[in-house]
Length: 119
Image (tube, rainbow, N blue to C red; front, top):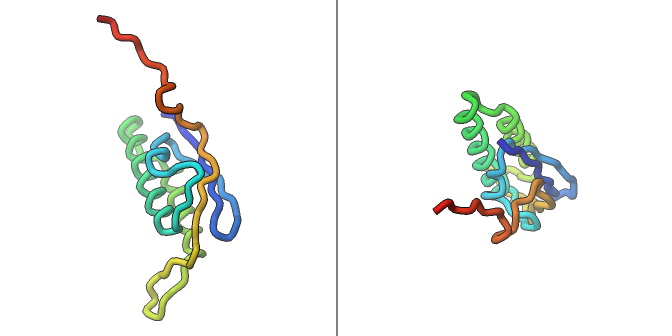
């Protein structure tokens, strides 16, 4: 199963290199795009849960690295929220997460090698 890394810049300018045991992250994030903290956390959690499920299907156990990465991102996102008077989290204004890189990159559309048919 191909694994990948993705590098993000948090709203405070700090960088984080993250891990996924599957290329599924490409289905949820795009290099060069920016996401609100809440949207980023939602997208990454969905991708890492899917990656862990794929590992479970292939090897018979969930990927603890994917779960740990998801939890780390969720914990880090907490520092970019504040609490309203009722104690509910409120996203920080202009809190954007920038996706700087995703490795390996997916091949560009139309450049993937095609298996010839044997008709």
